[in-house]
Length: 273
Image 1 (cartoon, rainbow, N blue to C red):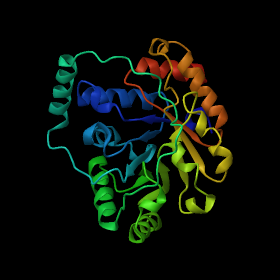
Image 2 (cartoon, helix red, strand yellow; image 1 turned 135 degrees about the vertical axis):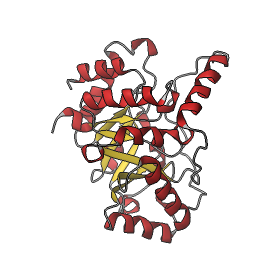
Image 3 (cartoon, rainbow, N blue to C red; image 1 turned 60 degrees about the vertical axis):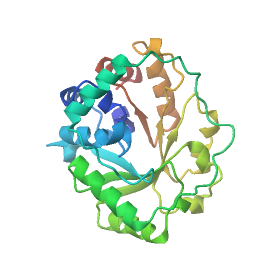
């Protein structure tokens, strides 16, 4: 395996590009650079991220792995064509007054409360089918419970997830929440889950011990560049941060995202990919 096998590309910002063609060109460029894991969710880009990713996946589905998510809310698919929605989004950004810089975000000092959501089988079935249709695929490589913990799932929903895995429609199951939600969990709480996905890096010191807490799980880091100065985007600092995260997680994966292919290329150059 090479360093590229331990990297993944986050598709959260695909719909912020000017057009479906621009998003496809970005994904094609990332693919040409050697990245093969793509992470999305039904809520990313108000539902357009999965749709935009599907256009890139045509003819490549057997060459890449795809992660998507469930559990944030019942699926609601967008009604506008992606091209029109992206043009309207670009226009809104041009008309919006400039935002004030926000402070660097760090891990919350207080752990989030236990979930109050209950996710049933019908909601889960609808979410999985909706994601497969949007992605144009009959299977998902990694299916992640989004911003919840396992206690949110009703028993029938857990049964459905096991059916998906037994039929190979889902290759792996995982959790994708703020890492602070995992701190009170025990290994037994995570028995059916293969993967933990959470924020990691200089801005998330509270999450550094999760690798030791759950050594049997595959860990996927994201938001590693939170707090890295935007002025360093074309330099070496983001790549050095990502390289440090890869070194901390040699058996897992590190996600990063950009809408600028030159920045992706610069990061890989520093990492050694």
